[in-house]
Amino acid sequence: MSAQISLARLSDADPLAFDVCVRESKSETRHRVTLSQRDFVRLSAGATAEKILEAAFRFLLDREPKEAILPRFDVSVISRYFPEFEDRLPDYLR
Image (cartoon, rainbow, N blue to C red):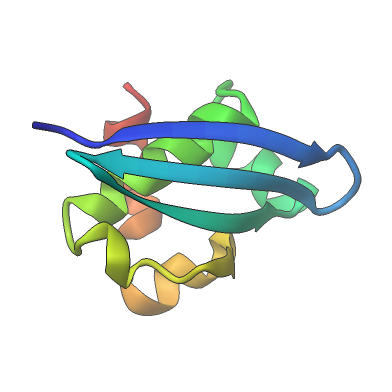
């Protein structure tokens, strides 16, 4: 069973801020995630910020359990842990 990812935008300021909930079976994790306007423009390829966040979480969930995802982070840090993130993101946006 794949994880369900729900997002709520908390701020339209720079950086954009989101509350992300990841549900699998009967457990869930919550994450506070930011996305700078600069990174949004660079990564979007026409996608909404919500689609970028959902794609980023699918990318992360393919590599680690939801419990290993940081509770608070900026999207820019994903590449520090997974250098292939920005190259693979377009695959997850499809």
